[in-house]
Length: 304
Ligand SMILES: [Zn+2]
Image 1 (cartoon, rainbow, N blue to C red):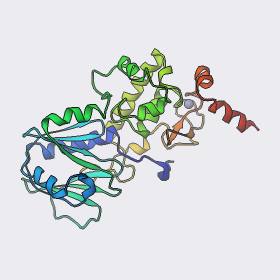
Image 2 (cartoon, rainbow, N blue to C red; image 1 turned 180 degrees about the vertical axis):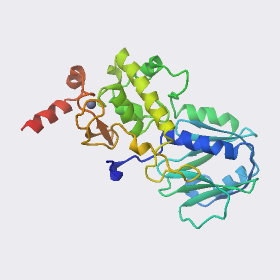
Image 3 (cartoon, rainbow, N blue to C red; image 1 turned 135 degrees about the vertical axis):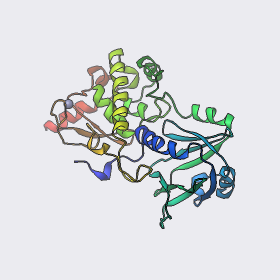
Image 4 (tube, helix red, strand yellow; image 1 turned 60 degrees about the vertical axis):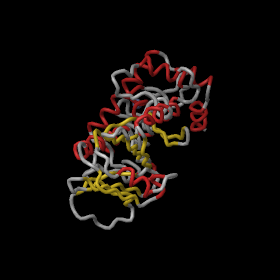
């Protein structure tokens, strides 16, 4: 059983990709006829009315994704960069809009339909960037695109080669791999049979290969299942994903590991709840002595 109190805090790559795929056919070729932004936090430090006026009249060329960012590219060369953060969601609607205290923005398209942005916790952001600003903005914030054909285990190794941090923390850093969050990092490490506390730079070539495969497999699996429905995440048409029933370790503390039957353990790493199999993902002796003796210590404690 999953524990809703400790579950994912934000949409990750598969969820954002699912939103992108649903939104693209709705938005491509459409003009933003009227834009209402009701929450100053969404576009801070800019004025909502100013940003709305900038967006009005823009025609959509494409809807793309980079890491957890949605990129609405306009024919003018400008882009609208949307980050859903913890609870942001987008819906497409053709009817009359019901009252909703969490609605932060509405875009009326030139076909009469609306795209609605909703955000309970209000951490999401909208940012309008000029053509020459998008590349530099993203390149300082997001690293390798893990599903890109150019992403290889060697490239992963280069990204990790100088990182002494636990692999869990290094993978959560968006400058390592774009779009990985708490859920898919735990899933990828389980697939790769790597302990989440292992120093990132200590992984050998075989482990890097397994991790590369594990990252891709867990993300592709997530996309195939159309993302999770954790917290306030919703698909644009209001439908729900089924991913929350598909996790191998995430949120499954105490349940048997699919591979070996050992109860899944839960700990905290980099301030985040972390789930792993203590048998399949045993810390290597080298990692245990050089960085942290935590696994050994807890074993001693439990035997008292
Ligand atoms: Zn196991």
